Picture 1 (cartoon, rainbow, N blue to C red):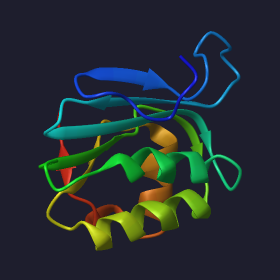
Picture 2 (picture 1 turned 90 degrees about the horizontal axis):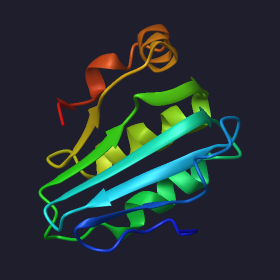
Picture 3 (picture 1 turned 90 degrees about the vertical axis):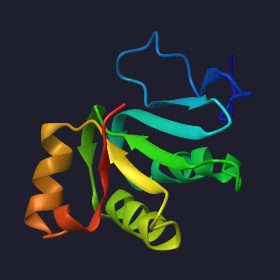
Picture 4 (picture 1 turned 30 degrees about the vertical axis):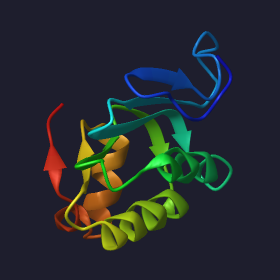
Length: 120
């Protein structure tokens, strides 16, 4: 599937996960929880695709989760996008999962306490 949006109850990939060097996003949407899971390097080039993953959110979604488990690198562009989403959706947006590069950047920028955390 070559799409950035998933149908209710399904998942989709924005690029085939077969290439280990590729950046791709998995989206899971059951109608109540929207999970956007980026894989690979999250930077100036790929952050717009992360933001596009959350464009499918609706009032029916109780949780908007960004699963950071597959992120191997994250720059300030991605951090700004996540902070902005947390500001726009303070009751619904949360980070799920983690990776060392993500936690390191959050710690170094003193933004680790700006995000709600959920387990999936």
